[in-house]
Amino acid sequence: MIPRYSRPDMVAIWSPETKFRIWFEIEAHACDAMADLGVIPRANADAVWKARDVEFDVARIDEIEAETKHDVIAFLTHLAEHVGSDEARFVHQGMTSSDVLDTCFNVQLARAADILLADMDGLLAALKRRALEHKDTVRIGRSHGIHAEPTTMGLTFARFYAEMDRNKRRLQQARAEIATGAISGAVGTFANIDPRVEEHVCAKLGLAPEPISTQVIPRDRHAAFFATLGVIASSIENVATEIRHMQGLRLREARAKAGWLRGMPGARLNGEKSDASWERQT
Image 1 (cartoon, helix red, strand yellow):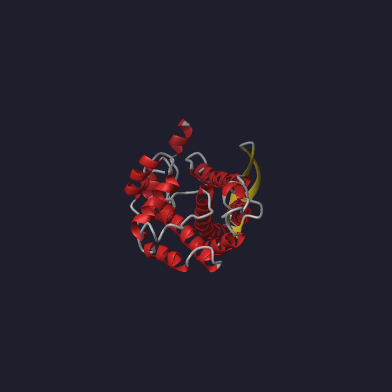
Image 2: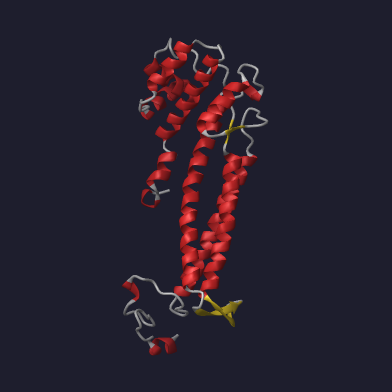
């Protein structure tokens, strides 16, 4: 999305810097769990956390990847530059790249969903306020664009509210489904890593362990998540189109607060009379 339409808190979640920070946390927590199990030395696990406050150099990682042709290897190489090659020798032991990539992606999706859910609370409050404010504001009902029974503006906003309330529940369910992680090794068999490592990492990241993992986290979770976003977007479009229609000069059932319409033919703001000559022309 172009910068002027981008929100800083959402952009931050999807920045390379945040991605590499989550990658680091996955690897560091995995090392902690393996040290607790006696798989790797505790000193090595502790040493990884020396990079806790490091701002990973995206350009440097890209430079390494240009040589290694592998994104995770490039990151691990850069991490070793900060931690020390000997200290970092056990990082990523028993894991596969998808353990890092998929778990990180789901962390990002869950965080993004949290922002959207908070926004939906604000939207629902605004719709409820307008529904109550205009419960007795009469407007013309329409069927196929033709005048029908009278209705109220409040009912229109109540309909918006009900739809968005359903959407909030859908997004809550989608977030719950997407908030899983997998640290199960190649093809998900746990052949080279203890399942307790996965449990520890997921707990630290606010995820649930994927119940049946393979090489990747199942993609139906992502499909359901993005399908939910599509439904929500269609509802937003519905609200926006209706309000734009009501603000049109032919209907004038809603008015913009800004004064840019003042003086235009047919405009009515702050009690101004409509331009009858313009109406005859149309």
